[in-house]
Image (tube, rainbow, N blue to C red; front, top):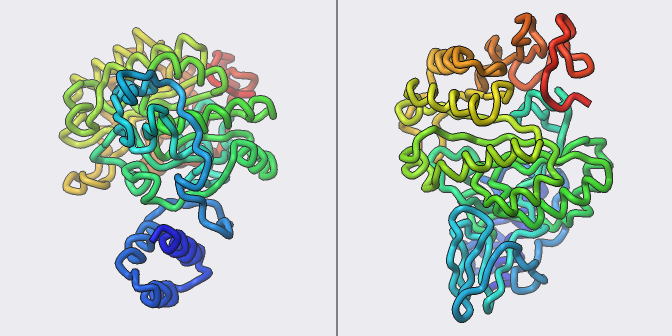
Length: 403
């Protein structure tokens, strides 16, 4: 059955790349007598997010066939039980079981990562503004990388097709850290971004890619939910050039109910990134009725100002119905404008509105003279008036990564 499943995965991949039509795929499955299994594999292939333009000729090996990479940051407990130390959950994992993320497995007392070198999403050329990062080399293109799995379970996840899946439920590709870096260099991309799913769960892969990228003169970007434990985070930040942290709300209840997670680890992560001197920005997805209380938004903005600084960019992003929250409407634009007004009122200097193409507040303004520093329409940069890290009009120093 295992070999048949691999054969079907290969066929499904051909369908995904339009090298075989659906009828031929199902015909092959019917002949093999495994139509139900084929349907499951086919649907997974069709639902996956964009990947590399050229599919590998052969499916990746099963976890039993390939040499797995030992995970980092875990301790051995009684017998063959281990405890993962990578994120705030500190999962206690019995032999043969996996952690909450679904991609780290205990085998005879050793913790292995099941996604090292096995990305399920590889995209090239998307602008850095889409991460979003607005104060990092505007208009730059990046290579994006993700594997299956996540240590949150957000009911509003836009990438649930891979984030809420196990490695067996997605089509993955063999791509070593060396090949990732080579690919970025060949395509003249300045950045490699870890995004789409939560990079924490593919920590070892991300770490090795980042370290090698640094050696080759490339830069790396981290888009995270912010729940990594302090020690692995500090080690990783040595090789990360910039990041965006999702601060999903400012109440423990929201994190617990909508993401099955916790707020405090995220606040700790933000402080650590600040301490380590890595450039970062914050995104707050404003969801109607769930985290749009203006009193809590004010508390959040004051916390950011007092703990991280008034010059940390804050992006208020518009929610659209997704995954398990299709019953809610998109965020009213007026709500986003009100949140931005509060942030500016408490003293934050760089506050933008995202997911509203054409909105004036999608651009960046000088907090000193008020002139438009970077004119944007959605993810496109139309004008950049920052010169040598300063406002072209008044000379005010603008924090960020400009060279």
